[in-house]
Length: 457
Image (cartoon, rainbow, N blue to C red):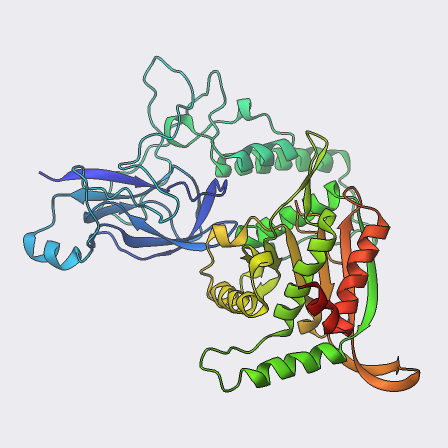
């Protein structure tokens, strides 16, 4: 007899609490193998494919494409033991070991999950059985019974898993104790909070209309228009930038530098590697990244974070260098691990690989977190300068404008040189302007005279 097992959205790591369904990779009735990807989801960090730990037939899917689910919510159900021998052999082309319960336990490589999924935590003590709400109706199933909405009144601790749901309620002054959860066991979902907020807004609008029902004045404008949800990568970027601006007392200094010698050195490096089988072209970004690691060795204050609760500056011993990359899904910051231990060529190879993954939307959360300093090359957009916003919780970001021919006084004479503007935004809590200026000046000196960098290696 087939056993129907429920596969829930696993813990995706890095503190992520929810994900949006982007694309289903299986249909109801499909036979799935152990660890076969069944759905593509987007988190605040990256796009990932979620493999199913069970082997069997998909009997139901929960959530349409575009639906946000909290970690622990049902994704699909699989009938284990119902696959006929012919299709079973064809579908199970995986060598993954399967446990006695038919689960692999490897829901996401690198994060790990238990099999099968148990309740992540007990939401509330309740000695009496509570009727379960339907949560999410399966997107496809053979003539399911019409679900009856069940409203569960929460007594005691509020049944909320996602901290994002709590924050959303807090921002709108909503008492979660008055919200009826429609999730399993009375779980309060994001949709429940949003519905309560909308209801509150309607009541407020009706009250305001009752007070003032006269015609609109010429100064009033129509606020209707296209609304784009701040979700996924865009939502994560918006939250991080807002937090950076609200928490970090930043300041910016900048300088123009003559990059002619740097460009010449780059051309010489690439020409020397032209006949080598293993030689790769060195990018300007790779050179600037290597200069940054040398500068951070001299000015470690800028490779820090601030522990606000302990009122301490935490100086990092390793340099994990982030670099801004623009993709179709928005701005992401991949991280080159242990950049201080790498050569310029190694940094360049890692930047190229991470950039390609970013464009394909295949970066993992681990590749997007843990940076200690960020390099932002906005010159690729054809602009000269900017005031970078620090990538919280880091302490500084170096911005690089376009490198263009400009009139420049070189060796006492006016000449046309390759000039670039460098901008450093820094957390004024970790250092003063003298340190920040010293860092930026050293970077500019290395750009103008690459031999300065060679001397420090």
